[in-house]
Amino acid sequence: MAKSLLLSTHYIDPLADQAALDHQSAELALHLESVGDETDVIAHGALRGQGLDFAITRYQNLQFDRPGADIFGVLRLLRTPLGFHLAYRQEPTSALAMRQLALLRCPVEHLVIGPGAALPADPLSRRITTRATTAGLQAKVLASWTVLDPGPGSFCESWALLAHPGEDHVRLQIESWPHQGAVLLREGWFPEAEDAQAWLERRYGCAPCRPLPPPPEDSALAALAPQLPIFDPTHPAITATTLTALAHPSNDRPSTPPSPGSSDRHRHR
Image (cartoon, rainbow, N blue to C red; front, side, top):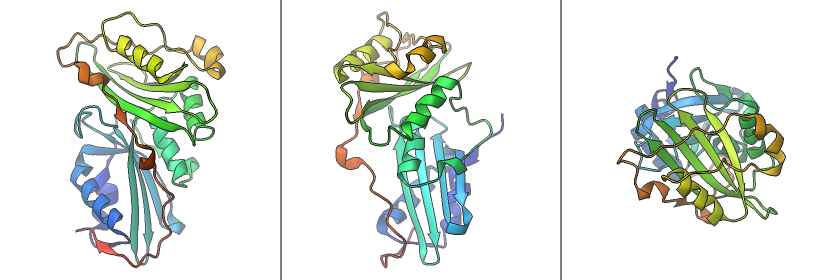
């Protein structure tokens, strides 16, 4: 399997002698430089004539940042004659990472998936990803977590609880990377957030768990699609903290990237 590009080598190191247009860009460049060699670029795109680069990244070590942390990163880099503006945000699933690129006004149709990126690609996964980047743009992420099963046949999952405006249910988006087999992205449909949390507790506990109930528009396709793998938490590393949700405050949503030209320029080194 081909190795993905390293974040620092491809995006951050070349900025060493450029000025940041704002303090936040300077701080982000320093942070991404420190984690760059632990982070792969799994998809990237550019509008060279406009000085715009954008990418989706993923931590190589799923526990590198902190247990439960969102493992995908979304990067938007705008270069101008005066310096650069950098935006970066972590997301729990690849679909929400794609959505964040759309919110940052990056043309996702120019995104090139890297070799060996291991992204979900079956028909149901593609439908969920498309929905996230279209009808799901205004959905609020209520909570998210990354779960690592270190036992035999281990796999990793990340989940996000979503509230869509105008819907009387919540959606539970789960992306699963089994030790062997295809990566899957699935979405559940629950009356209340507490119902989704109860489902997660049964899945990551020792209780029998019913299949993830799909939203109405996915019912027919979900009936024929592969199911999420069974999670068997027999390893002592699986603890109650696995179920602790990382809440996303409403004011944590990114604002529209500012236009270049700010006089507040900083060197990021």
